Image (cartoon, rainbow, N blue to C red; front, side, top):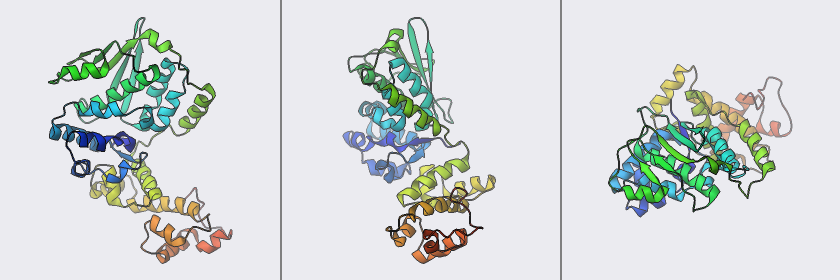
Length: 341
């Protein structure tokens, strides 16, 4: 199954790539990641594509700390709604609990286990993948981001007790000690950050409990991310249609596969790409045509039709009336509702 991550994870990639002598556009084309995701942070992309990009970038540049460099520039804003709810919690402990509970909304292959004892709290990172462990740069980027988020709740002077990494030590261990500000153990059993149990009680001065409660209810409403191949294709199609550039080739880029793979997987699920595209078009078109000032030619282009006339024929076949009639409130009894569409 293809795990997805919000493209906000690549927000600082161009900056970091150029700093080590790489052409970010060229590197992204090599791993078949869409360049458009750099400007649209909420577009889902395949975790596998991101991992290939990080590993290839580290190898091509010789920067063994490439993942840390990305984490160093990021923060709560990279995590969208998850970052917002973390920021508004009353204590650091509650913020870490919220982060571990909702992180899958940002990255559906990432999990954090928070294990307390009398003196310490261990935050263990798990990244799902085909290998027994995720590759090194992905671990560095993810665990480095967790460290940066906790540090942002305390201030720049905070340090964890220890950091554990499962892979062998790099050539420059000092770089890792400087980044985390503590002892870093390599060849460990897990990838984890250890902090003092007292740290969990630290109050967050900027927290707003009412806002936190509101955000929690909103994020719980969207907590369930798609699990099936059909649902993941549906999610990407919905996002790309809204931006006006949705083709099976573009969807394949976001899922790090080929168009043939998409057609084959959907056929095995009893559906097709055209059926998913048609349903999402039907859902979006009834929203777009509600605005009488919006040109129909522009709507046709956004929905991927070759011409306005082609959209008009499709609309009549789908809804049983013309767009003009629909705007006037005519709803044939046999026409599907917007939600059904």
